[in-house]
Length: 89
Image (cartoon, rainbow, N blue to C red; front, side, top):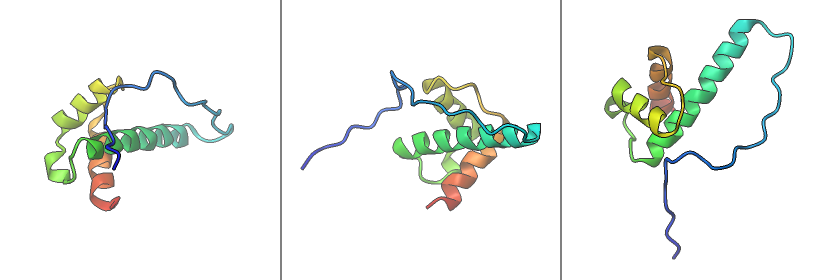
């Protein structure tokens, strides 16, 4: 049986990025990027064993963002991360 290793280190190579669709209101781009960031953080927290939203406080979420070399999330993004952990099962 193979053992998988989990890491929260940043990837050395990034995935190819596609441009976002043009012509949308600025709010759409802001919320889209916020959702992507929240998903990345929620996945990283789940990989490190944080399965309950109550254990994912803002400090832990921001520390995870720092380990992943992601700009510190806002309070709104932290709430979104907890919601993804809560309802994303």
